[in-house]
Length: 282
Image (tube, rainbow, N blue to C red; front, side, top):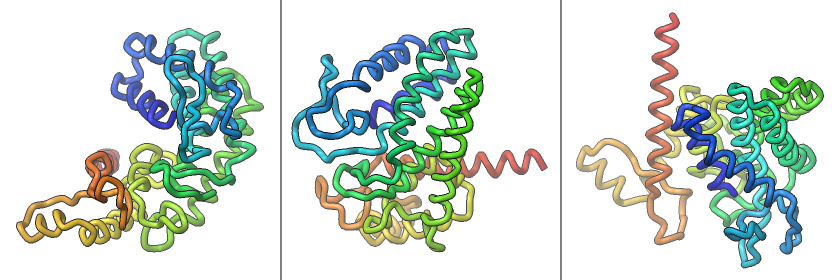
């Protein structure tokens, strides 16, 4: 459910939120969410925090896994709220209302459980305060409030706006320790922070912010010391640095991960775009 929510969000962005280009995939995704969102979960958790489902049945996966994964409702509702706004922009109000119902179902879980413990996106570590997960919550409430407003559901708009601000204030007051933005207590330096910045930074710390710059400086030092390939590149004057998930990671040998390194590159690109826009406006 996490990879699906992120992939669907990116799919819409890559296709410029063009209704004709995304409608078939997004209609299928919304149908899938409607199918799995109300299943009975055999793993004794709320199905909205279930990480995996069987295809094509939609039954929750019953094998061993790190559960619950509390980022799911935020990622899924965020993508669907974006889809709902595309529908409205193309005069599909009835379908947009149906999508809002799906969004509301997930946001209801966040509303009642945003401080509960769950597994991180690496499916290894447990906390009730992941920067990654809470960033997804804030983005989901922002998009959900926007969709609700466009559909004249001012009751939902106000609820989503208020709670989104509450979670945002919680993040901004605790997750920057003066030196860097930390992922969670006990997993402080975590590449998911950079992933969160490029995915949800518009609602929190933008890529050009001082806090993100300090975080990259800290993470560069940590991951340079972590991987011999970074040290070799430095000695050979090769620019750039490869990021991993977190220090002392042992998964698959504990190597750098190309997707997080790409996230770092995207963060630089977005920061440059922000600086350029500021200069252009001045």
